[in-house]
Each structure stands twice: as structure tokens, then as C-alpha cells.
Amino acid sequence: MNLPLIPPLQELFDSVLSQKKIRLFILREDLIHPHISGNKWRKLYCNIEAAKLNGSEKLITFGGAYSNHIAATAAAGNEFGFKTLGFIRGEEQLPLNSTLSYAKSCGMEFRYLSRTDYRLKEKPEYLQQLLKHEKGYYLIPEGGTNDLAVKGCEEIVVDLKVDFDYICCAVGTGGTISGIINSLKSHQKAIGFPALKGGGFLKNDIEKYTINSQWELNLDYHFGGYAKVKPELINFINSFKIQHQVPLDPVYTAKMLFGIWDLIEKDYFRACSTIIAVHTGGLQGIEGMNERLKNKGLQIL
Image 1: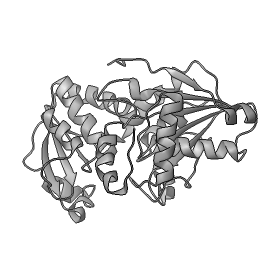
Image 2: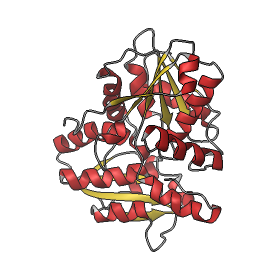
Image 3: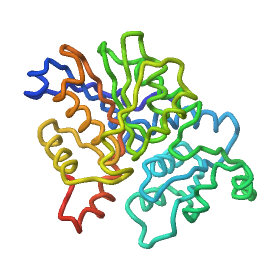
């Protein structure tokens, strides 16, 4: 499966960048596909090829009620002829939110797991019980990260036409940055920005998939934890869109770019460096976040 669209590399211009003598590009992975965008396409396509080779008829996966991965898996199943089943963390809530409504429109079936049961999903005995009535399925882990997903994400760097010093991406499960790390040249470094509070545990997960040490995690820009935001982040998202005509999702890419900008101002990056920021998509989550922001008087444009 080839990329539906080769993602453009967009250079950003700003007085701070000029002052610090930094070139900053954003890799618009969000434009790859309208519904299977960013790192979700990269993670899923090798798995879909494997599912086809296995003769599987159904894709089964896990995620939260606002999960980009759930939405993308449902879209992929619809596009490539698979049934889909999503095990959703939490109790069923009606009406469905925008993410689950979209996934349902793609034909995804839902089963809801309590948060306690959801934490057991990686235990073999519980998983066997959960799937005992399923046949002809292909299992994709929460967030989509596995060996095949990392292989797909290695291609993010391979096709880049600009030589760079640093490449940055948001980190959820660690699959995307693992693929990026594996494709680095000797003079290049990857910086991951975990969206989870206390994301240092991801270091061990990333080391399982990577072959070099030219990377680090910056734990300072999670804004309180996964899917949590603050007014300064929302203001940054809206200002960024107005200035650069690039929409940012509030859970992942916005936090990364906020961190990059802050580090540039603090002279973390050496002068005359070239930085690439990977836009990993996730824009479907904006509608759901705006639903939650209403009572705070905030809105993402």
C-alpha cells in the first residue's frame, strides 16, 4: 500500500526563529489521508498487509472513547474491506461522542470494558477469554504499536528531502518515535514529547524497538497529563493556526510544538540548526475536545 499523499514539508517563519538562526519545518503527516492520517496510516498499513496475508476478516483493537487509533482503525477497515471491533475503555455513554459516532459510521462494533478490566487487556489469560468467541481476526494493540507499526514509521525519515539536525514528535505508545530513531543518520537526533504525565516509563518501551541511542524524551510539556490542556496551550494552538495556517491537535502535536518553541527560546538548540517537527495527525479529536472545553469558555479554532 502506497501513501495516498506524500506529506509536504512546510517551513515555518517567525521572528524568534530568525533571531535564534533556526530553521523549523513541519512534516504534514496529517495530510496523508483524510481519516487514516499521520502516524496512524504509518502504523496501520503494514498490519493491514499482514491481515490480508493471514486471510483475516476482522481487525480488533483497543482504545479510549476519543481515540485517534479507534477512529483510524474503523476507517481502515471500511476502506480495505475488514470488519472492525473496538474494545472501548469505560462505560457506554449515549449519545456517542464524535469519535465513536464516526467509527460506528465506518461499521465498527463496540464492546465496553470497565477501567479495571481494560488494564488487564495485555494479560494472555484475560485476552484469551475476551476473544474466545472471535474467529478470523487480526489483533492490533492499543495505539497500534507493534513491530510492524515501527517498520511503517521508519519510512517517515527515509523520504525526507531536507537534511536535519533534530526531528521531534509527540509520543503516546512510543511506536512512531521508535521508527524514526531507527532511520536516523549519525549526526541526527530525535526528541520525543510524551503526552502522558510521568512518561519516563516509555523509555523502556522504546528501547525494545530501537537500534541506536540518538534520542531523548522531554517530559516537561504534558500540560497535566494525557488529553489535559490549559488555556495557554489553547491560545498557542489558535495563534499557530492563524499565523501558519496549520491546525494542531491538542493531545499530541500541539504540546510538542509548544515545547519546541519554548526550547528554541531557551537556546536548547544550537544556532543554525534545522529542526523537523512531525505532525502526527489526530485532528479528529478537536471536535471532542471542544465539547469538553465549552464549560471553560475555551475553543479550538
